[in-house]
Image (cartoon, rainbow, N blue to C red; front, top):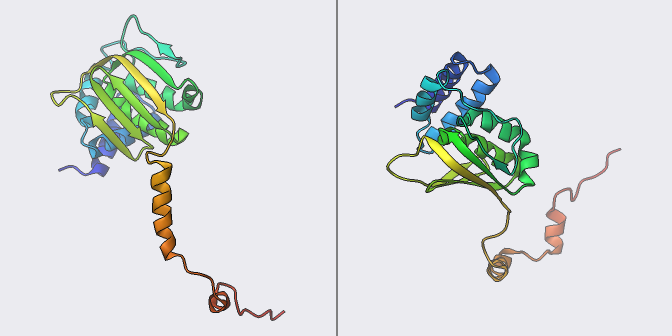
Length: 203
């Protein structure tokens, strides 16, 4: 079994070999490492994409708007991912964006994962019948077809999820009340032994 370090190093070199800068290649490699860590087919999709990258005219997107459509070629998932990270502070204000025709959408996931960490919000990606929840670049929760993740997202929807507690205020108060049983009432002896107590000034 290949180590995550091997996966990252080889992905980086392969990405540079097909024409990406070393900086972008490093970002791609980190993304592939993340996908493989969570059991998603990063190497497989990257291999397939790189076989076509110089044969097909994949589209780039300068500015990401609320609705983004391509009437021609599919969007490059890597260029799209880099642009998403660069513009995520602005995109966050849109709350939800849609993008048509993303090639190899699994390769777009790690960039959304990084973006989630940057803005401090979970990001939800939906395309076809697949759903991916990106959690602050720490985990990816997925509900996708066990047959095969499609090589084209005909229409992808990306949503920023506002942070909120999943428990009720009553549940929190009950738990907090229970935690109060560990509180120790401050006594004179505790005050004497507290940090800094008993120190003398020798100046």
